[in-house]
Image (cartoon, rainbow, N blue to C red; front, side, top):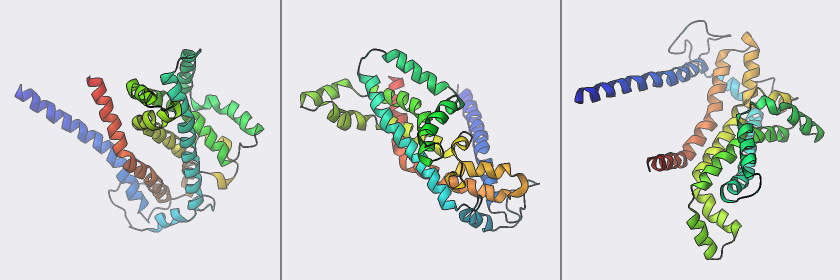
Length: 284
């Protein structure tokens, strides 16, 4: 039995080591390219360290990496679109999720099924109706229109995820608040919402990532370089082939990853609370 436990630990460590290499090697490769000043197009050989260490690719990225558009404009557009989509999806999704978790009304089950179906459909299925609606509203080529597009993609998942969070809140706590004189709005704001915060955080985080990293569908709703996001600019730079040094692309990748890392660092305690709660609930 001891020998089996020892073998199991060794195998587990080997698997984790391989997974770690699978994650770390691409990141290290991007870092190496970002500080390699010798690249004129794409790399032609594998290296662990830059051939010529230079900060020029990084500085060029912070200047005007895409069609003479300032990096600050690209970052601003990405933040507006991703944060706006997350906010809209959370505000609308929280109210709908709470209604689905606590109230009974006609058509509840069919509505949940339709939301699940919408979450499973590929985003391209929404392109035509969104294109028509936003064109009628004269919002198709604006950042607000792009924000609404990403919020539409994220809303079904947010509703399902937050519904589970609200269902995990004990009804006895809400009933106690009712007995103390609180109405439905106060009970939702002061009791249900704080206790479901881990599920809400996960929904908001995934909504943010969806708006921050998506680029393929967004081109349909962008007509000017001033409304392009960071993810779209990276895609456009890749499509130019050898016209752009890969050191610029790697620098853009690293800089673009910083906001995501900061968001995870800020929300790590809430995410860990959600994971611990899920583990304890499944164990019970």
